[in-house]
Length: 344
Image (cartoon, rainbow, N blue to C red; front, side):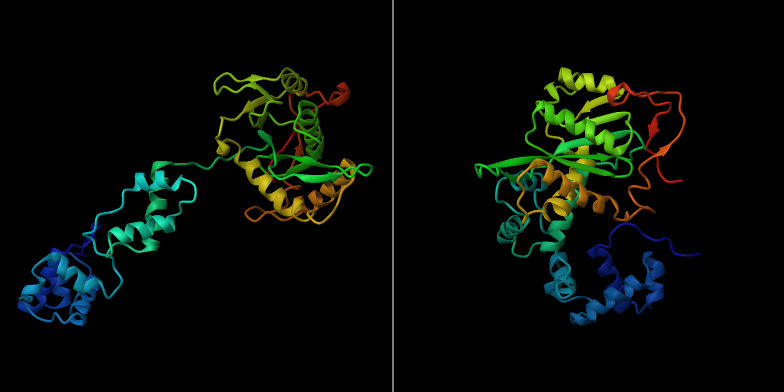
């Protein structure tokens, strides 16, 4: 019958039993493995470490009566950390890491100052990341095609030069991303006020060629008059836009960027792939800036997707007849609703 594998970690008591059965009773590696229900590789590895440490007999010298001394003799040379050290207080480390200027490297240095024989930096970082995943679990949001469009403003701005006075004015960058295909739209506006916010939404829907079921946005004043999670109060003009396009507005929670993770990544991509390329150019009008953004946006959306076959544009939409109509600009009615779907 095959030996059942043990899932628990081998203890120092098991190591002493391996040494006793091997050197005192003269059993082979196979016999020790069958008696202790351990794999032959485990038994052979501990015997090799014992011989390298000069422990090739039984009973062990008096200096190794304690488990700590035996473990240090066997595993110190192999780079294994001592198991008797107290683990760091991970909740306290998580709170300290939120303070300005505090890093994991600094916290590990303080830990090693208190425990010179403690764990190494790699183990410290990996174990802390595992603690974070347990303390703040997250799940991957898989968006259906045509379900959501997420919108936000980028933190990076582009300076505009007044050709007459030479005055600089910072242009705001509006970004919209489709949930399923990550198809991206970007435009520049003079501010984040209500008219520019509405214009950004309308131009994004026109660019995508259809209306999603939900528009997810941030809690800026141009969109949300009263940011409440259960009953947010939308701006009247923004609510009228949602009624006009027959869609739903869903503001995110305050200080919860994961609620609109797609557009957060889209903002980062726009800043790196578009705005970074325009950093050395000087613009004298908003139209010239938007023309440059549109040119680079075409290149951005033409990039092949890494984890999906095809381009974002090819996954953008497919017209299918549906028992629904949507109203477009100029009160122009469409016979079918444009639905964004995945390829195939």
